Image 1 (tube, rainbow over the protein chains, first blue to last red):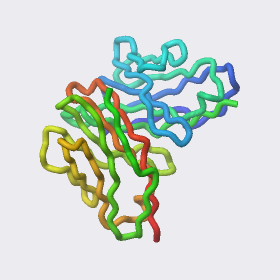
Image 2 (tube, each protein chain N blue to C red):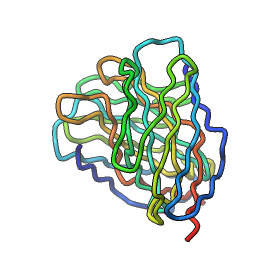
Image 3 (cartoon, rainbow over the protein chains, first blue to last red):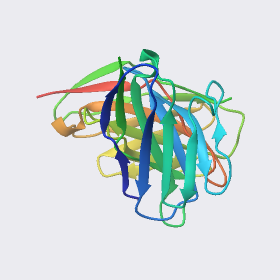
Length: 116
Length: 116
């Protein structure tokens, strides 16, 4: 499995501002994924980030609201833009890794975001 | 689109007993993967067990095993000899087969309580 870190671990932000979340992996991976977990809910995929190409967004998520960067094979950022209280969630990055298999996703510790 | 259903919002079991968590899914694909993840209060998503759809043999990992019924599209998790540390949210997840480029589709989760 991969070791994944996220920064910040938590933050409290004012509405209308933006927050950039960083995700760092200890090994090179092709695919990185960003998920949102709203309070008391399950995880929902926001987008898939492949190094060297534009991120692919799921229905209901747009690049203007959640811009993603993927500058290399070990790092990605997710920005939550023009935040509102509805954006209060845990944001998790994950990678497809595991020896010869990329079929299993491993998750970072998450970023707990509260928007006031 | 694939859907994953966990019909038990909460389950309770006595320590050292066995408990089974239910999961059903809907898909028209023949190649896919199924997972159980555990999320303790720390919010870290921890992989419990995975199952490849092409394998008839049920996956096992120590005290954790699955009952994979492909025709019925059922994927239940059995936890034997329950321990206090097993208390967590458990999420069933689905991923399409091939390439590792697809994100996970999660069920709503089951909150597992371990009674001492």
